Amino acid sequence: MSAEKRHPSLARRMRSHFARALREPLVQFLAIALVLFGANHFINGSESSGPAELITISKGRVSQIADSYRLLAGRPPSLTELQALVTDFTDEEIAYREAVALGLDAEDTIVRRRMRQKLEFLAEDAQASEEPSDTELATWLREHAPWYRLPARISFRQVMASSDTQGTQARRAALAMLDRLRAGADPTQLGDPSMLPSMLPAMTQDGVAALFGNEFAAAVFAHIGEGWFGPIASPLGTHAVLIEAREPAREPAFVDIRSKLRSDWIEAQRRAKLEAFQARLREHYRVVVEWPDLYARQSDSINLARLERPLVSNESSGE
Image 1 (tube, rainbow, N blue to C red):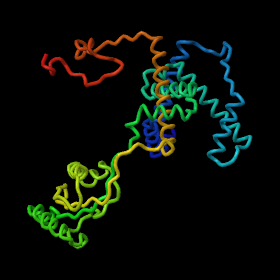
Image 2: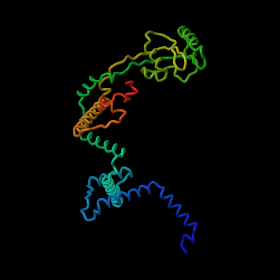
Image 3: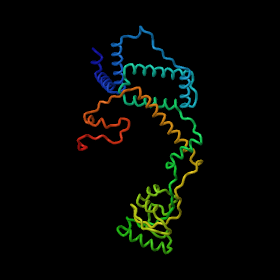
Image 4: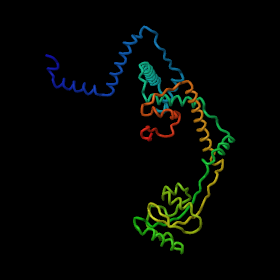
């Protein structure tokens, strides 16, 4: 009598486990790899008779593997551990070469993107920017002065008639508060409760707009004069405002922004050299684009290097 007939429940469990194993992604991946390996062996024949491909693990690479382990573990690897790491690296190198030989890297978006990134990193390292001199940084500052100009700032006090509390009477309430404030009333005793601060330190117009809205910020920065003014509306209510101090826009001192200038200069040099490197690479290739029918009639007007606006069909553009 067979084992399956003697133990039917055991056989069913084994078939169930086998079926679940077949649904595992790792098992499916290994099965695909075996099929591809078999296909490669069938097409190219056995390579056992030819010379083995040489893989050299240099001292520098072994040191790099050991350093990586030390950074992760906090100590150098033992000889046994290092041998295991080198074996793993060797297996990875063999798998990579076999995958490339089988064409598994082709048409893989992630692989293409990573290889492009590594090529660009190599280009940047090979053409690393030199340390800029103060003269070069001063020239950079003159040529890009608007980037570094410090915007105007104001500090101010505000008292608000809340839209939630006052409703449609918020403006009338703000006008009444404004009269009392101009007459010398204590601003801390007026206004509706709010999450907004009543006293704000020196802030740029963008900073004020982030709290009170663009229209409020524009009105406050446009105001000329002394004392309480308003009322000025915001999304939360209507305000009476008193400007405490103004700081006009100004050019920063070189010494205060030297580190920022340096990082911007180096980044600009890096981008310029990378673009030049890519331009040199393009010179070695002739690019032919087979446009889909939707875009074929527009292809003459398309700038491949820099698309400045979305493509539209001739039908949607009214032609």
